[in-house]
Length: 377
Ligand SMILES: [Zn+2]
Image 1: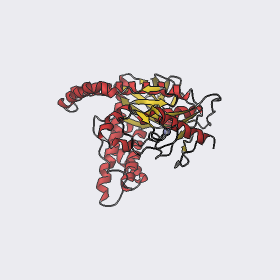
Image 2: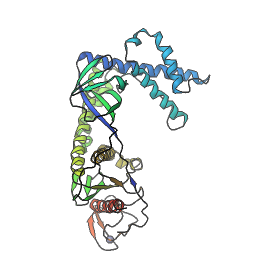
Image 3: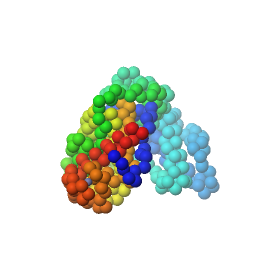
Image 4: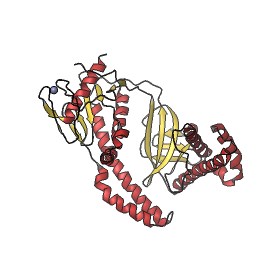
């Protein structure tokens, strides 16, 4: 099948980096330690930022090295700093360095001070971390239990601790160094997938995975709890309690979504030899206000990234159609292309050959065909 106007598509490269986020089994001592390290990281960041602001006039503190050297001198003034995880502060300053660099390059706005009560996280020294089964040894605090084992073997290149809902998590990035061993895929078909809001994923064989849209289900409850939070005294005990409630709801929403995404992606990668997908222009789609909410609720980006990482582990190539390829507007039977196809038209009626086919299935078949063409090149 020929595709006029289709230039060679991009095949996603396989990398040997793996990340995993694992819930921690914490007691009060751990919890207090994590909180104070997050506070320390915030303190280091804000302290460096205020000096950077002051130094702007005299043109100093331009590089990361400057920021680090400054912090090493500066922190001696604060007695309590000695007892902290030094890396937490250095990584925070490292992040500030990056933020400043982005600001200088006009890629982002001027960095802001980090406020209390916001996202709690810090990065620690990956080289002094040890992992044994379901436990991890962290600098200064020692062994902490984990709910799962680390799935990957290799050098740990980044370790962050963060809080989501009521739980603390460790996120680890591992450089496995070993190339992926491709799974035996003979006999399995090439699969085209159309992702969207109406149905999360539609395959070329007409199989559909419905979209859970959990935010829609919890929207009213979430709004109510958020309103309650705004009425509490900022940073008071009741405010923190309410904040936990809101975070717990967010966490539940994320869990529902993740669960559906994991089940669908596992099933898809287990039944395909090559996968064809489109290149989503999510930022463009977000400009449409009506679509934006439904779009962020379905978290298509998260779905695709899970699909990619699972395919990568199994050595299944993912072939992305070129960015401007109109998978929805093109007829999968004859290649005829419509100029317009509104989102409400659920069935594709072709003016060229008269075919009538489900809109998403039509797109999935087109994506499959591109994947087939690419895979044979
Ligand atoms: Zn047609």
